[in-house]
Image 1 (cartoon, helix red, strand yellow):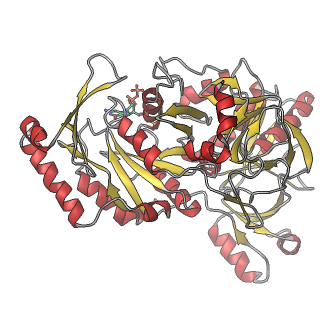
Image 2 (cartoon, helix red, strand yellow):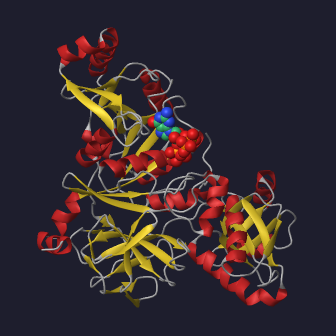
Amino acid sequence: MTVAEVGVARGVSAEAGRRRTFAVISHPDAGKSTLTEALALHAAAINQAGAVHGKAGRRGVTSDWMAMEKDRGISITSAALKFDYDGHVLNLLDTPGHADFSEDTYRVLEAVDCAIMLLDSAKGLEPQTLKLFDVCRSRHVPVVTFVNKWDRPGREPLELLDEIEQRIGLRPTPVNWPVGIAGDFRGLIERSSGVYTAYTRTPGGASRALEEVFDDAGALAREGTVYEAAAEEVALLSEIGADLDMPSFLAGESSPVLFGAALPNFGVRRLLDAMCALAPAPLPRASAAGDPRPVDAPFSGLVFKVQANMNPAHRDRVAFVRVCSGRFERGMVLTHAATGRPFATKYAQEMFGAERETLDVAFPGDVIGLVNATALRPGDTLYAEVPVEFPPIPSFAPEHFAVVRCKDAGKFKQFRRGIDQLDTEGVVQVLSSDLRGDQAPVLAAVGPLQFDVVLHRLEHEFGAKSELSHLDFELARLTDAGGQEALKGLRGCEVLTRRLDGALLALFADKWRLNAIARDHPTVTLEPLLAGTVAA
Ligand code: G4P
């Protein structure tokens, strides 16, 4: 029997039960790429660190599109990784690290069942971690915390726990506890069993650390006073009731905490075990009408990301679909809920970082890459047999606005095609009005780097070199036809139509202008959009 046949024989509920679909959220430089590689490495999915993100000097993705990402040292593209571990199937969805792409991150978080909040032990909670955590909270995504870089000097573990509790109101419940201060890391005490694992760096390689297991007496004999100090802290944790509590974890109120260091592979395997044991398997997903679709219902999936040009060998466009229910089989004809049109899935693929393989069968929690799915947009639903439509993924409030124009009038057709595609992919929001016309649409972004992506792609992918003129607007509010009429011609304000969904967005120069106009026109609808920026 092939692996796919085993899956078919096993049934959808059992397969869904084996899945853990999660993302790592962190501030840039906390070690997300390193941890992703270490997790996959431990799961023996890859035998050489570096296949995931293709950082300089490592094996990996090399498209010219990625060149921009490499130059800037940031991760723009999202990849999905799938690996088997200990009887489970783990789907690790990558999130872009940079705040300017938080809208992409939000979409990815729509597709996961759990998140790992990765902290740098020296820095604790950083602005981007806070912001992403807020998204998890709003979506009720359970969060496991991994305190990384324990091999380097850092802060006190109790102080870090306190920060988590005080600043984000998440009750930390340590699963293990470090022996030796950050920078002089010796090993981890497993709180539930008291077993001590000592770690030793493997000479010459970051691929594996040496792990030795001791009981209490053995640990004391080996580590002496540092072990005693850690054991006292562990006793204190139990006294203050910081014990693992599944219901509050699943409700997003407490967070299991694990310590370690991704680079030398300390505690990474323990994190994998924790994800299998603690993270929830796929659950029924509520439709827009509020009805939960059971995981063993006929196939349904949510498009959470559309990405073009991921690899020079495959210059195409991939829609990433999270399977929500049922068994997916390549070749099945699905219905695109937004249009009611049939959708063929002959070219389904599985993503493995930059690599792809044809995918034949998938189950709830898995990610399917549908190639050249031009009609699909983030937030779309695909289903088989029994109709369903999941709630749309909300757009973030844009805070940067610019007019984009093609530099070469002869390339206008390519320019327009490019703008349409980037809009559909959700790279940027495209706004228009009769007044401005097709030649000069307005781009609206959460972060200015989105504009750079647009210019880069218009030039290199569509052959339409373009330029931007920034507009003096900072805020957007949703309005309606009445608002459009009432706000016409007012200084420091303009109403434009968002092409994607036809929503009317009123743009304002700043919050004072907005407040003044709202005061003068109290009956005008001015609804806030989902905040893209959460104060640190
Ligand atoms: P990111 O994706 O979150 O941005 O972080 P990334 O993994 O690129 O890690 C950022 C830096 O932190 C890297 O060093 C990486 O080697 C280091 N790092 C990650 N985990 C650990 C850890 O557990 N211990 C220690 N000591 N360092 C860690 P870099 O010098 O900026 O880059 P590189 O040249 O090593 O790639």
